[in-house]
Image (tube, rainbow, N blue to C red):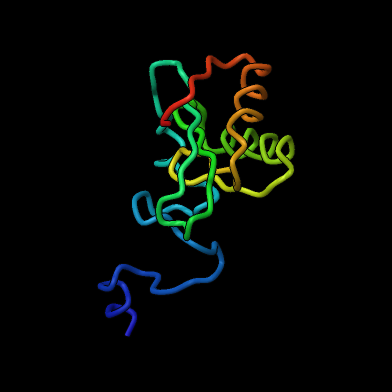
Length: 120
């Protein structure tokens, strides 16, 4: 029986570490493959408004920030508090619920970012 388990690769199932990263086989909290990737851009943060795929509701998008995941989450939290709305961070893009392009741009400029309005 013991030889059969070792041929399967040892441990079959464990709840000790929680969710595991499929790429580096580490717990998601200690994932090393996602931390190394920092998006690089031209140094300009682009703020736009979008309604596609959201049932007509508008969302303010912030793209082009060269921050890691923790930095994006912290900045997203500050922007949500400044606008008084909800939002999220997905795939390196901060989404703020509602049309708050002017508030977000002024908040980012006060933070020292080079900001540009994108879209119409």
